[in-house]
Image 1 (cartoon, one colour):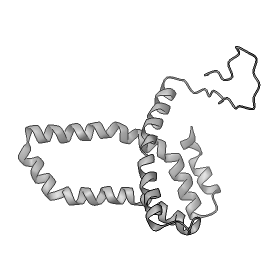
Image 2 (cartoon, rainbow, N blue to C red):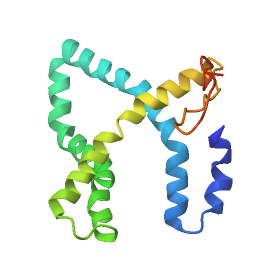
Image 3 (cartoon, rainbow, N blue to C red):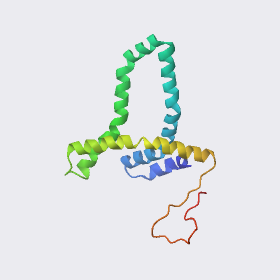
Image 4 (cartoon, rainbow, N blue to C red):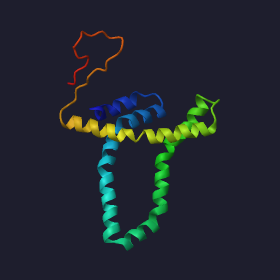
Amino acid sequence: MPALHTPRAALAAHTLAGKAEVLYTFLQPVVCVLLVLLTPVSLGTSLATRIFYPQDAAAFEQRFGLLMLVAFVIAALPLVRWGPVYRTSVRPERSRLTSLLWGLLLWLYTYHLFVVAVRAAVRLLLGRNGWAKTRRNAELTAVGDPTALEA
């Protein structure tokens, strides 16, 4: 299980940024699965509150709406910020608008990880932890033989 190797891998990284990247990489699937599980609970609670306690829901939104928006921006900002950082360090000839677009696209791209992480978790729970090698064009196979079998 990857989480068991996290401390050893993080210690092996030489820089603080490297350690942060290792922790992010190892913990991202766990966080994705937790978010997938907690999001319907949160939405259901919000919907039930809006239906059965509309005055409380309105008061909550009025009191904490701006804070929730700020939390959303803070959560998205590191991903969106990646575009300008990448532009500065690797592609300085590209425009600032392009770098902002890169960051926004990265932020949107990360949402596919929710699907991937849940699929992986379900496969683990079902005991389906095999890996079928992807066929490469350079490989030769006998006619009718499968290139990769799901384990």
